[in-house]
Image (cartoon, rainbow, N blue to C red; front, side, top):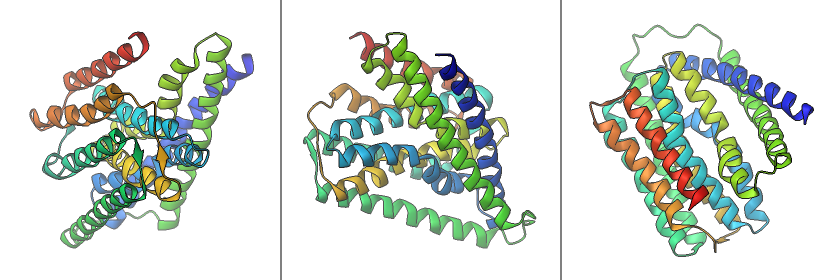
Length: 309
């Protein structure tokens, strides 16, 4: 028990340190390439922070555990939209760009709705997976186009002086520490919870679901603390799209999943969470502490229903 507590402290410290390096590298890369932090957050950062979900879902897929793989994505995306954005709003008022309101969040809602409809059929086959992969390709291609357009319009901006190799090194190092220490933290917390008699269900809903979202949480909170609002919000939206379109798309192309125990309430929660995020973004086109409280309360209500219904 004592060693697990020590590992939890080490894991938490490592996650925060890794997120700090990762954020510095990502922001520097945005300045060097003369694109917005939002675009970097939607693409490079989102892909990096979605690695834990990909690993968990891919392994579950190969083992034939479709419910576990889909449940991981549902729990992670709901946590992303409600807890990560809500917690980030506690540190920083996040202005919402017009593109986020009318392009990125609606696309995220579209991908999530398509995913929910697929899950309701009881199976995500290779045809469904191909649609998800196509949606991912559209998302990535459009953001690359936006990045190129921003570079062309920002030729007069002073370029980042940090060498490219150093920025990429910070991103790789930060991501490696994030994933490694995040896994250490999750494993140790799970062992402590089991030793205290906490049920597997509670562990899965809380520690494991939040654990695979730990890189997103740490990255968004550090970005918010440093005033990088575009990175904080873009990371969440991009991760949600990556988790569904890329992770489940690739996994189901390899081995189509059968699902027998996916709850309708969980599906409504993952879709409702991103719709709620879009609605609060519409109010004043910025996310304040009050909107953050609302998002956190929504997650608390969902968690209460799951645990005590």
